[in-house]
Image (tube, rainbow, N blue to C red; front, side, top):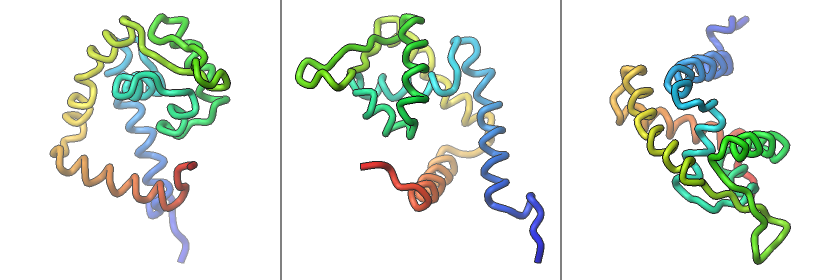
Length: 143
């Protein structure tokens, strides 16, 4: 039996990821954020002072992808990067006042996205949990 792309889970996930990014764009554009910047702002708003490696693990991004993103965010005035006083090999990330303000303005984005989906909050949570389980089975987080 030959499968067409529309029969394949991989294609459903791939095309859905594109649709999700496209749905987020008009929500983030007025804030001046890209989708990866939005994720970083949200992660730091939840746990300010993460190291670059901790943020990379949270977002599942390698440092070679994350570092240019963080440099642009620092240049925009949203965060600071500074050497950890206990371990100078580590760089700590902290939101500035402007970054915290941006995070507060972005707080409505999840609700707006949920409205676009037409799903109930419980359905969104169930779908997220299934996708996280699939992701973790395919590529567990680095320890």
